[in-house]
Figure (cartoon, rainbow, N blue to C red):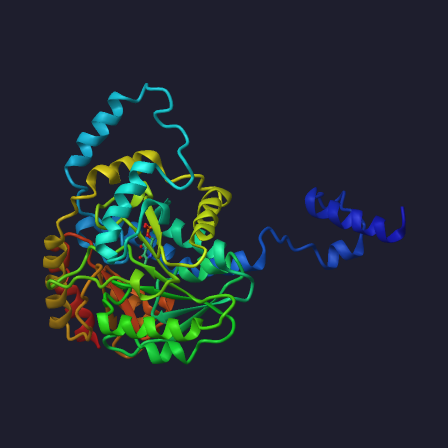
Length: 431
Ligand code: PLP
C-alpha cells in the first residue's frame, strides 16, 4: 500500500469508526482537518434551505396551537383546501369497498390514466378550453405538481430558461431545477400583478423554452384577462416563427374553478399550437391528498403524438407510474360537482374587511384563495414575525420572488378570519 493510500485509509477510518481518544488513528490530517460529511449534493442542500420558510411556519403553527389552543392561532399560512369534498365521494368509496376483493381492484393502470377518466377529462376540457381536445391529448397526472414535473422532464435540456411572471408559486424553481432548467422570474407591476406581456417579451432569449403562467394565481389571486392572454398568444406566434426548438406556453391552473365575481377564467389552450395546460382537482374538489391532475396538449401541436408519448413515459420514468386509482375513480364520479365556492367567496370578503380595518393595502383576489398584501415598512420577514407574535401566521413574499409583500391564505373557517381582526389591529397600531 502506498503512503498516500495509507493516509486516505486512516483518515477514512478515523471518520467512520469514531475511535476513542486512546485508540485514535495517528494520522495528523485526521486530527487537524477531519472529513466533512457531504451527505447530499449542494443543490439539494440549498433546495432544502429555500423551502424551509413554509416548513418553519408549519412547525411554528403547531407549537402555537399546542400552547394557546387551535382557535387562538390564526393560521393563514398553508393553501390546504378545507371545504368538504362533495358528499357523493362517500357513495363512490362505498361502492369501491364493495368491489375491493375483485381481482386487480387496485392494480396498476395505464401510465396515462384510466381510459374512462381520460375520456371524461377530455370532454370537460374541450368545453373549458374551447379546443377539440380528445382523450389522446390528455394524460392523468399525479396532481398538477406531477403534471408539471413530467412536462418539464419531457421538454427541458440543461440551461433552458423558463420565464414566469413574478411573484410565482415557490415550488416552480425546484420543479425546473430537477432537469437543469433555469427559472427566470419576470416582475409584474403591483398592486394588480396583471399579466405584462411586454415585460415577458423583453426577457425572451434563444435559451427560452417555456413561458409558464398560473391563472388564477398563487400568491396574488389575479386572473389574466382575455386581452392579455391574446397578446401573449401573439408573442408566442412571433417567437416561434422559424424556431427549431419551440417555446411552449404552459398554463398551471389548479385554481381554474375557484373564481369570484362571476369571472370565468379565459381558456389558454387555443392561444398557441404549443400550448399545454396542467390542472387538478386538489382545490375544486378538496382532493389534494388524492393526487389527481391532468396535462392537456393542444391537438394542433406539430408531432403531438410524440409529446403525449413523452408525457406518458415520464409519468412512468419519474416513478409516479400512474395517478392513484381510487383518486381517479373519485374524480370521474365527481367531475360534475365541486366544493361550495360561495363559502370561499364569503371568507374572501371577510378577510378583505379585516385587512382593510387594519389599514393594510392589497388588490382584491379574483380567484384562488390568497391575498397578497403589502408589508408596512417593506420588510416582509420582519412584518410576518410581528404577526406571529400576535399568533397570526402568514408567508413572507420573498419566497414567492416578491419581497415587501406577504401571502394570506383564506382557506380557513370564516370565524377564524373574523376573530383574527383584533390581532391584526394590534400589529397595525404598534406600527
Ligand atoms: N400549482 C400551484 C400554483 C399551486 O398552488 C399548487 C398547490 O398548491 C400546485 C400547482 C400543486 O397542486 P396539486 O395539489 O394539484 O399538485
